[in-house]
Image 1 (tube, one colour):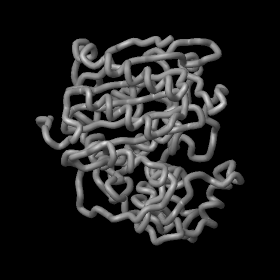
Image 2 (spheres, helix red, strand yellow):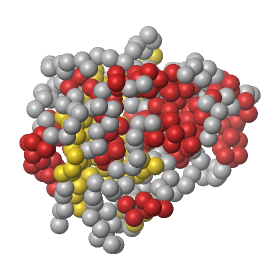
Image 3 (cartoon, helix red, strand yellow):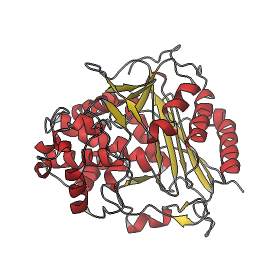
Image 4 (cartoon, one colour):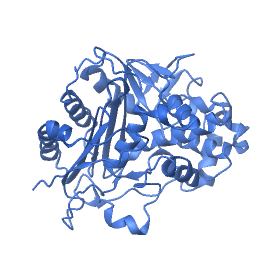
Length: 391
């Protein structure tokens, strides 16, 4: 049985007050999407979040654990997987805003143990855009701790010139986060907690779920239906380790829609994460975020989130001198062994969506579901026609 609840998101940074009438206007559409996803992909529990004109609503369906039968609620924590990369990029961008680092700096400036390795001459921007020359998606099975990881980086040899190709990679983004934390003279998890989660009021987002919140932590479900949670790993916090409620994820998205009201360093940081860096086909790689110029259609969105883009290597074309702006759709996928996530938003239209599930279901289905929800918010599907008034 599907259990659902529409609740007002805790709006931060003056983004707006919740409007229950808005929620009712698209609740039927959201429920239909949830029913279809859960049936087609055997998803135990699902939280869907919607933003429209500064108002945010989350809708909860199903169970957080099939073993206990506990319902998904507004307090349910899901693993974000690689959506965590956007938060990591935001932390690094805080370092940039405070002149603690520059995107053109070589990695070895902050991690001198890599000075004699090819990866040491890669820039922070290379690592943050997965374009250091072919770093793999995952570490080899022999890497079990930081010493092993550093040995791996010292022995790694690029297959392409830095900046010439883009190959999506946890090992690239993980090292990016490690270097950024070193530049900011702190431990990554502590910096994330203090500079991002606490400052932005994200009280239900965690690098490590504390004991008092464990009862809210959903169980993921693997292909065989077994209850699973993410395993610890080197640079897990940097690349895929955050856990959050759908409500907190919406609050994070809302900040990107109203970030002119934030402190100067945070405003600069969000601008930096949304600035276009390299183009891969129709997709633009930013820092953390991936984006698409308007008009956007479902075919382009599916292409940019395809297995070939996630698992393969593509020619990268630098976008020099670009700044955040223009009518674009931003999105990010995230997966762990038992969870699947997808977030997307359009700043110029004030709309966004978050999908969190306790099963790793196919990414195309996530993208199509988000597209259907966004299309039901009263905006044209080929975005780029109607422009939102600036904040």
